[in-house]
Image (cartoon, rainbow, N blue to C red; front, side):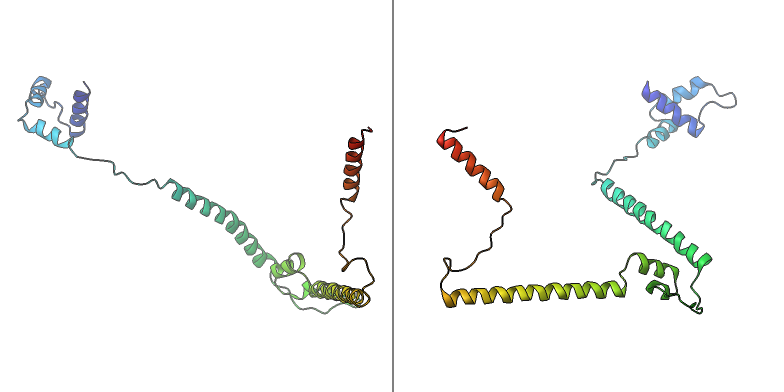
Length: 194
């Protein structure tokens, strides 16, 4: 039955069905004969050895491309709109006289608004970098003085040799309270007092 419906579909597409007084019995009988040109034509239509080529899936690659395009556009489109707005409606700064008593900040010396915003909110000013460097130099000098004092203490300990220990080893008292409680607990358990 399925073969017959397929034949009828092919006949409808090729318009071989009865026209102008030709009987349907004549067409059907010619279809059932194997040597008739209509049957050969139908068989030729159904015998196109179409196969599915087995190949690796491209789903991951397509998904990766989709995500790259999505996140690129997620950043590119808003950035382009902001840059377009700033360049069209705000524009570069113009030089003007500085009013009396006004001290301009370092970010106000740049002409483009996006550069001014980046210098003001993202980058450190020259004064901040200078003060950070001064603090770093102070810390290093302080460490150097501590090392020098420790070296002098070790040298005196070696000269006099009147200490109980050969060298001083710094001890952290961070866990001292915990260690004392554990020692007292073990002492109570060993003596039998609760």
